[in-house]
Length: 209
Ligand SMILES: O=P(O)(O)OC[C@H]1O[C@H](OP(=O)(O)OP(=O)(O)O)[C@H](O)[C@@H]1O
Ligand SMILES: O=c1cc[nH]c(=O)[nH]1
Ligand SMILES: [Mg+2]
Image (cartoon, rainbow, N blue to C red; front, side, top):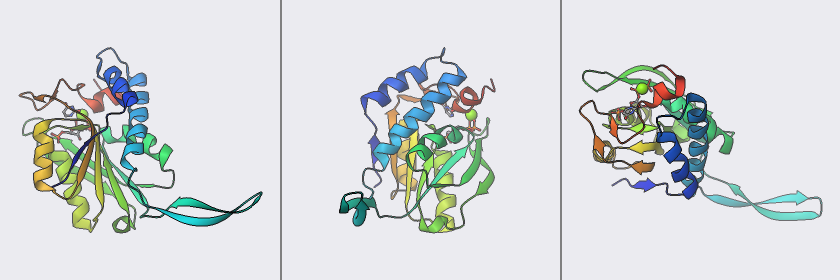
């Protein structure tokens, strides 16, 4: 079964508390999402393998560590996932970025797919799917299914806030994929919004409401 890893670092939890506030404006919201994403990236890369390589310092030869595993692709789920891209790229500047466009139908709450563009060598990469919210789990589930259908085998998911219902459903459908999340909130409301959550992440990032 996939694991839910809670990113409990005090800086993350402090920033998340500010992010949730209704009076946090779009500029600060975007900055906080970037900062939280970067701190999540630190947690998520903890198990990346290292190899020893020989280099030359100005003083002579030295053996140093270098990341040796698969190259990384970051895959934001549009739109709100875009807010987390810069935070991850700050840490992993050589990562390529693929995009999956999904929106939740407001009546059925089911994800509707509208875009997909991946790096050519996506199947050889460690893929990190990013989206601030996992509510019913439908969007994250479909995004990972699309990636698996392309042949991707190494996938991790990073969400800032999750609902227990969505996380459980995600693990049921994709038992081989771990989720990193900063908070598992209480529940979903009748409109499938996360309670207490932070409202609509896409609208708050881009000022559309
Ligand atoms: O787990 P789920 O029930 O699928 O809900 C989560 C999805 O809903 C939000 O996107 P939204 O559909 O609002 O699109 P947006 O990012 O374009 O605002 C959020 O960013 C997730 O992608
Ligand atoms: O609480 C929620 C649920 C879905 N999408 C959001 O942006 N927020
Ligand atoms: Mg939205």
